[in-house]
Length: 309
Figure (cartoon, rainbow, N blue to C red):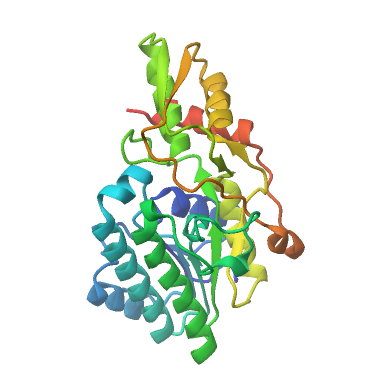
């Protein structure tokens, strides 16, 4: 990408998009297009068409999406499938119509089959049943991946896709009902510490295995792929390091400084039992993560403390 090229980051105020903007700015890119939801509703085909016709971006990072944890996905499946389908179909088609040089679409490793062999290779997509708790989101995101593949195949558009693992860091959603597990636990432990509680309840059994990637590492990988990868198949982005939810909770508990007990509520859903990412493809291209989990949690907690109000 040329340093002065027009680069549109869709979803620039979210966890992912804001990290991509930070990374681009650090690397010296000077012409980054940003629009808030009020300025541009990506679920509106007409607004997206008008924006692309006027601005004619050279490159697009499609990081805009409706996202949430198990509870949010379970509670609002119609919203998740509709909004994500609308966003990706509008942006991908507009990028094709206005001859964008390259587009990167962001999927998520949670859309691989529930019982996929571990570690999860890119080829396992669509090889089995989805996790029921996020099926609506997964179907929408899979459609976006397939759109990029088929537009590349039919029209030779340079549209690529990536599959980040569980992300966390500055700009995360710390809502106790609708956020992902890591930021929710940071807030739970912090509030329990302030309120001198003797225990913290954690949803599920604590046994599922998860992998977590600091969001600024993810953003660096996205820019790396935009500069170095043109393949049809999506690329996994992760650390290839996993731990149980119980181990994650213990780590966050130590970082926050909470002294009480952990109480696991096995009546709440666990979600997918294991999501271990095979990142050998990304490593072979020459990229590897830098921020280790404990350091990343400390950074995320510091950000939460500065922005919790």
